[in-house]
Length: 147
Image (cartoon, rainbow, N blue to C red):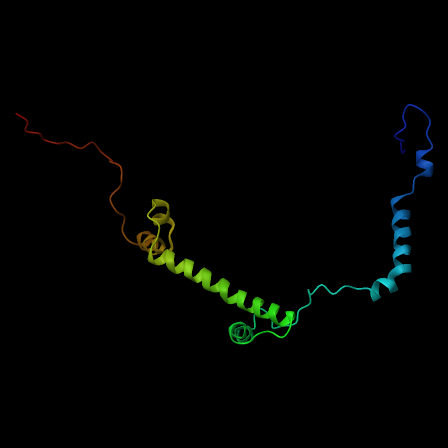
């Protein structure tokens, strides 16, 4: 059974409370009554797609070149030029970072061990013969001729 929050004294709270389903259906009927007016007063916030998609590289390249050569006639055209330019700017910045890391890698041992260039030597060492162990496997005997 449902217990009311008024556990010390008798309370009529459950009787007067509206169930969630009744409240939702009441709200839905209110929305249906004002729906035509809302449809007329719809705001266009500029989130619609008007230009080429991100996978259409030639069309985006043309729009990116237009950013530097042609002044836009509307905000939508300017926005599309910026979106197209952003694709190539992102690729250029990522490419420059990768090239910089390849030409001038960090000097840390972590980078030397886990860099892409180390993977070739790791594969080679996996299939080739083993190198001598790092730690000694037996006691080393030295002859010293100390006066």
